[in-house]
Image (tube, rainbow, N blue to C red):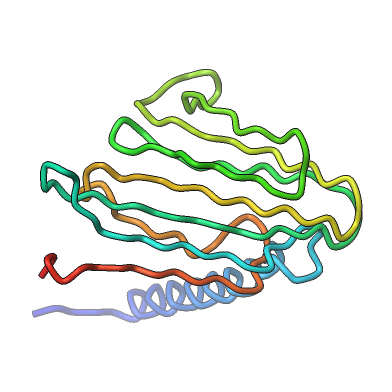
Length: 174
């Protein structure tokens, strides 16, 4: 038998009231940091295509082809793209059109000068020098072991007007 006295009921009501207040604060607080079409640099079009394939030795892998079109809508600005990979994946075939002298930088990922694991990062600095400047970035990422392909990100640091994500799964994967 469970007995509740009045003080327990009041405590439950206070918890509920605090949870409701917390919930509404979260809902109204998050949009303050939301991306908008009024941001300095926006992504007008982005496409990610994930294709499941077989190697010559018949082992499966996943190939991601990603392309994005960045537009500087107001004043000059800088965008830093970061794409992570590790010993079981690789990033290659990076193409940057519209900005001169931009080269990807490859290195180990570290936080506060410490290495935690085998995570590597490819960073691309996109320096926009004028309004309405356009940069198109495309790359290919290979996941050598499909077991480690677990997340498809739908958001970016910049506002995205249009994004398409395709998963191409061949018939032999049933």
